[in-house]
Amino acid sequence: MESILGFIIGLGVLFVSFMIFGYQFDFLDNFRFLGDPIGNTISEVIINIIVYGLTLITFLLLILFLGTILLNLIVKPIYQYLKKLLGKKEKLKFTDKKSKYKINSFPLNNEKGEFTFFSSLDSLNENKNILYSKNFSEHHYAINGNVNDFSLCSKVENLLKNDIFTIDNTQDGNPPNICTFKVNKEIKFFLDCSIMHSSDFFDKMLKLKKKETISEFTIKDNCLVFFLLPNNTDELCDSNFTTKQIKDFSKKNNNFVEDRIKRKKALKFEVPNGNYIVNTYRFDDVFGDTEISGFEILGHLIELKK
Image 1: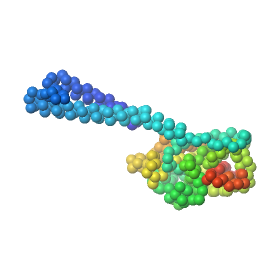
Image 2 (image 1 turned 90 degrees about the vertical axis):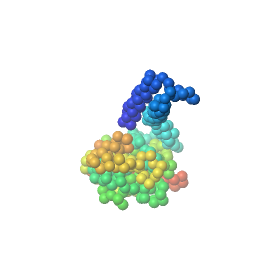
Image 3 (image 1 turned 60 degrees about the vertical axis):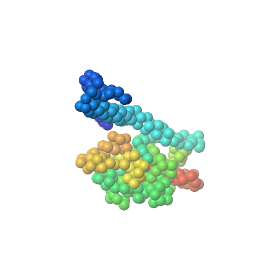
């Protein structure tokens, strides 16, 4: 929308500039530049100075609008692509193991300073007013020294009464990878927080009897939603909500959810209704040793409770 508007304005400015030049060269034959006379009478001098000033201002505006168009249509998309390309990190493969499960990954459009959340669609709609106006950075995240481990999954109980959960970013600042797989046709979700390739640990992890249960929650609308929210206190966060956005969110119930989906900052999955359980798996549980680089948590499993 911004690109189209900038393009229309640029065309309008270009048209006005040609009109001014037409007036200048067709009707003011005595106009001169760089030391030459710019008129034979005082009135002609004044008119020519005004026309020249308007021409200069018009060209400056034209450059500004054309620069905006180039920024939106060419420079900005290239910058976003390069940022994602350079920021993408491959998982480290330590073994030749292959998983028997078909694991599908679903990326969100994550930007610096954003955190990952998940809940039922009902819970999201009920709490949307609080979600886009409150500061979540004061709790749940290791970067502020509030928790001991990176990548922790926790329920946002300090601000919300409903079942909404957040996952801390990894030690290198990356969000968890949202993955799905099926066991006996039943869909399960794994929030992968490790630096290792999932095939190195996934099958062994699922066989473990030891589980660190985080919480349980209920889905009644057949919909599980993963979404991103900005850190309101991080000045370097490019996606902080503006006053205009917050005002727009408050006008209509679905505006906030639609905004998240439009910006590719939300994913909706159709799931069976029922009680779901969230379990955390750690490096030590799978390998019997401590992960000293700060990636102790391998990930979080969300599945229908049996």
